Length: 113
Image (cartoon, rainbow, N blue to C red; front, side, top):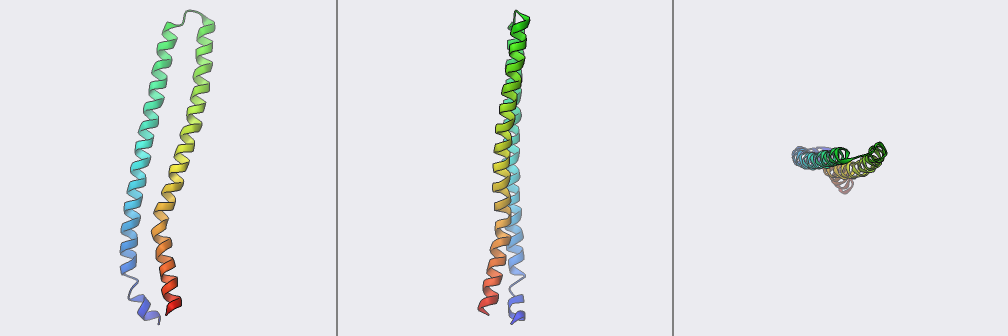
């Protein structure tokens, strides 16, 4: 019984590892694109802040701009963290799905045999 199931095992790891590799690559690409977008958004925010600082006439305006930058920076950080967390969670689910499917199939085949 076990020998008949073991003959099918070599096919499954190859497909499983291919699928894991493809999913990992896709998740890595998504994370890279999200990182680039976050860096771009942060750089644009910093440049607009510098432009506003150059135009400030009073020290109170500078303080207001600085406090506004900190608030917006924290909001952006929280939002970007949530996006990365969601993407990472989705990525882990996608990467582990082939393993889960292979294990479920092996258990189903083992119960059937």
